[in-house]
Image 1: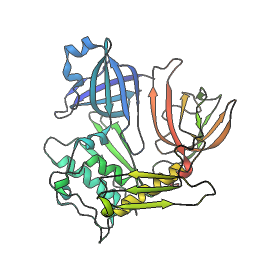
Image 2: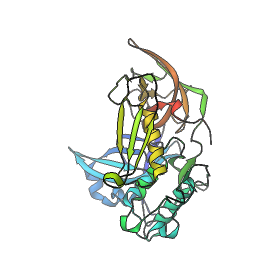
Image 3: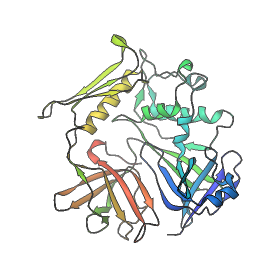
Image 4: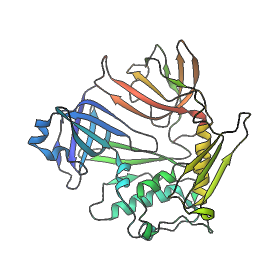
Length: 363
């Protein structure tokens, strides 16, 4: 792999550097989140040109073999011993620094039986309509049958609450039957600008893959940890939202599954919509009903499964063999981190979750 790091001024679009010499580079995307990048830079180099990594005002991109593989905003630059540590996150991280200061997303709401994909596009349209707030992010035109708001309980953006746009995005994708998103970046056709994109998937991102697998002794490095812990188990989840006392919003998701009853309270103090609370409770319960899950594996780059041959949201058949267990099953990729300079060649640490937590579909 031939990798280089580029940086760009967020407002002017001026290219600041075409080969930022980061070491200890690690980057990757995330399902329903921004993904992240970290790396180390020599302080002397940054002191000569501080604008090349100005936090909160600089885009950073990873190009591998001529293709942009990741893009985002630098958020944190700090000293670590004799070097500087850079931390960045992709496009949706910007919404965590933005609020609705006009109410109802500038008149786009309130929402009744609204497609969640539409509300997500409205979030971005509002954020990028304000002066000095346009990242140039393009949101997919995907539509879904997952709705938010009812006539009795519209989905609102009250100006006096200054709702955080990033938190609202999380709300819209956090249920069991809600759209997925991930952030991507790629060169345009003339390789002069980078297309910043939020991919939306319904009923989900990704697909069940039969051409790629993760197997101990083939491409999995080391023995992954398989967790069997009842501390986090629950088949009853109570989600609480806005309000106090008897007026506090509350939704419960519960099943009987032949196990001792376990309960978990999910506190979501900023959520006032009952349908959103119900979706979050159901998603949390489904996730907490699994024991014996594989959360993370590290794979090396092989011809059978090259790094980058899978996508966020894909189901991959995974086989783990070690002294304690034998595991085989479909796991869904929820994100990964590539380390191009890992000892022995490029590696990717892949975050997984049981595939049966999700409705199968493709985009």
